Length: 360
Image (cartoon, rainbow, N blue to C red; front, side, top):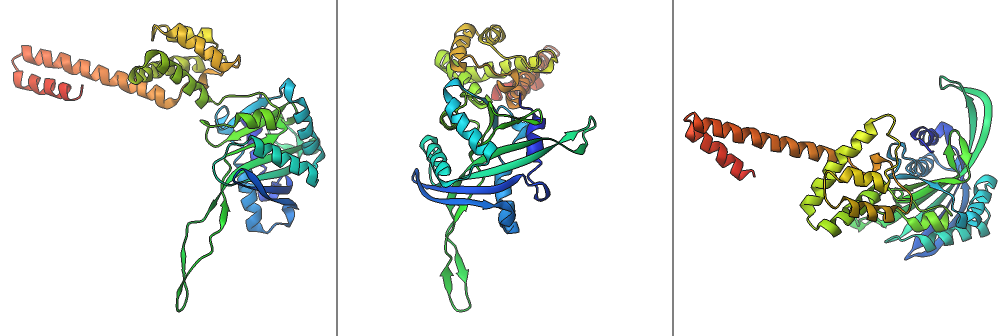
């Protein structure tokens, strides 16, 4: 399993003194068609400003604190072995010939759903993995050479129009096409346990609500994976189809969040995959529709069940406790109002009742 530590180690290489990339190549796409291709160029030959721009874009692909959301661990599929072998040749052999790159770009474009123009950047990396001591220090002894490719798919937008003040007149400035931060990308082969795993890839999406499953399956030859956001949206959609009330669904998800958090807190259970059976048992005390929701959840997951931590957010958990706190406050005020009324403080009791009516 790819860990935060694995991703962080590669991310930390994205510095001037440790830049892992030897070359970078690019392809510019306009209206879902390749407009131009930039041949591979040496990273070491770039000017400082250009060098760091390229490095910042590649660095964004690695998100160690967002495993299961912005970063997904992809595993090889049986049907995609030919595609995986192609990537092995590119990554391990550092193949940068025109024919291979053209075919790679065309495959990406055919499987990317992207509004507007975008740029595909391919980085060729080599990392000499040093033997590491138990206290985390590197020794001057190579353990393995990790060769890999990082791909960044970046929106490319036109600058806003602007004017330039000259000595005797004002002139419009030429507008440039700006390559932004990546929306999607990947690293192949995956870096796991300080070694290359050619049966896996690390996928990146800036918005976990909209990952590109076609890129996972058809471009990388990997099995389709869902983000935590997708799992939660699927459960919400299933509940809405059965229960209909958005307010009820929200409350059910908040209560589910608290029950899932209890699993995460238990050391022996924190890596538990939430199967339909487990989900049903968690939902039973919450709603009579537990079985129906769990059944649809099983269909959506296709046998790949997420950890508990991906099925809820801290916002949902906090909303549950806030709602309970509010209910408790109203109960206390109601009791206080009744006691004041019995004690002869009718005016104050009336004020409390009026407040409770307005905040119900």
